[in-house]
Length: 271
Ligand code: CO
Image (cartoon, rainbow, N blue to C red; front, top):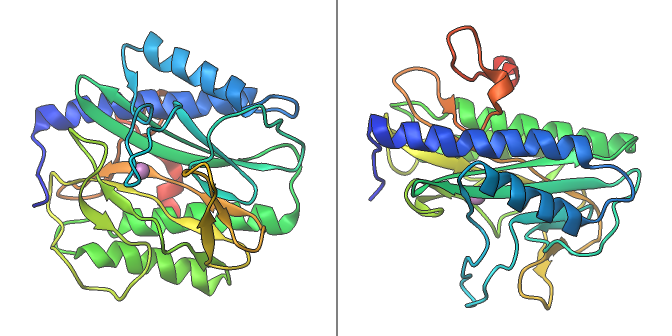
């Protein structure tokens, strides 16, 4: 069952999402060569607690019964997702995916952004651009009347027509009073399949895109996922809600408020 959220529930998710958006914005400013991923994690935990929320990933129990130990996933270069923050030092030319979930008054927000550090080579820059665009292609399909796989198909089509590779082993998900709810949102597949999308659904859409192969493996820590060819990977995610018109992105920073006090993303205009 895909739950439909009330106005009150969506308002709480908007608050959770704003903390996520503001945190990613703040991380952008401190993500410089020389910083360790552990420092980013400490910064994030303090930031979230100062906003009266809790990190959602810390203590999360995986399918293999492992507890995630950190606030962030900090997945560098060949890491796809779920790299645990450590003393790994960020270097000029790296791409760093920051994935973060927060829980505010029992409601969740979840987003990821892959940042270039300093100057990155053109192929990496293209990977980031196409992955972020694929997220927005997916979001633009999130409207009443469409079916779930219209999101999946739009993402896959954009990525593959730019000669990059969708990671098939991980998916997006419903979100709300749990971090992971139904439905599972594949990042590939034929259009017009699966449940019809309805106003009040809240979804975390999250394409993971590789430069050289779809194939990934989980390392021995039980968390970190890397590309099998060691080439780079990117990951972008937003929590959104379906409305009777345009989807609303819940995980934008507060600086994106327009004159009516609503948060908007100019990126959505290109889709
Ligand atoms: Co997620």
